[in-house]
Length: 80
Image (cartoon, rainbow, N blue to C red; front, side, top):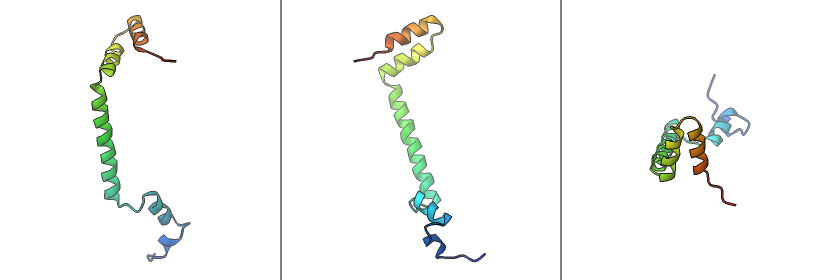
C-alpha cells in the first residue's frame, strides 16, 4: 500500500484524528510530557505527606477497631 500524503489532511481519517488528539506531538514528546506529569504528582504527594493534618490521619488509619473510628471522627471537622 502506497503512502498517501493527502490522507493526513482528510478530517475523517484516523491519522488526522490522531494528530488532533496528540496536538501533533511525537511519541517521544508525549512520553516526556507524561513523565513530567508523574514527577509533579509524586512531588505533590511527598509534600502533602509532610503536612501535620495528613500525618495525623495516617496515624489514625494505622489504629484498629473502635479507637480508629473515634480518632478519625475527632479529626473530621466540618464547618457550616
